[in-house]
Length: 266
Image (tube, rainbow, N blue to C red; front, top):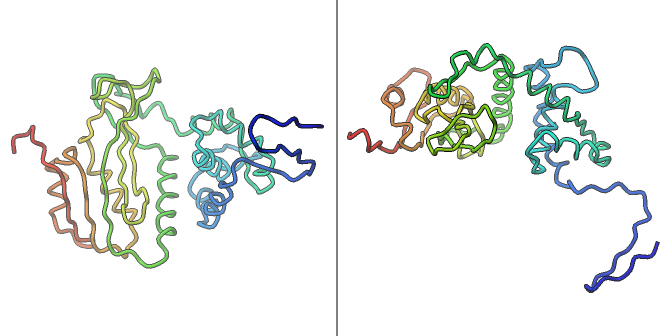
């Protein structure tokens, strides 16, 4: 087949070889890291979603999610793009169909835990057993990712971020748009997320922050002796401040820098 020359000064050459090519050349490093950290084994230990043994394991789903996110995907239909890539398939990436992914995600939902959820009332449901299983995988990841020089200090950024959403189930945020407002506890030195909590958009950022901070501390390696908490005025809550001030046996020393809430007049 002849390829005609275009207007620009470059030449098109037909590749007649049968070498497999991919536009996702960076994903093998993501896959290698996932496996080097022992995450497939960790997922299979802590996460039991599938009712019967099938073509894909829980670890295949989690690795596929990570790969899709790393490749810039933002919806379950993007799984089909990686699923069709023969080069990634040959490297061992096992990507389920979008329909199977939806089924997998729905397994984490328990409608009974959402009783009391109303548009005009802030509500934080308990985590499902499957979400707790993912949390256990996250803790193992943190311990394995810090196996080099033992860390002795952890600076934790505690923050809630509004994410706009047009889903019918999303509630209005304080910005006047519909969406969600998850809370993240981020370990600055290690570039790791220690804990997170997905929340409706109508849940105030100051609500229930202490349990998230406690969960973050429980994920730290035992070598950490100093914890520094940073947050905006959402964390200016006496329950949280008093807990940080208190000396607790076995807990790392706590320091904190939290913005004053000027609206409280204190």
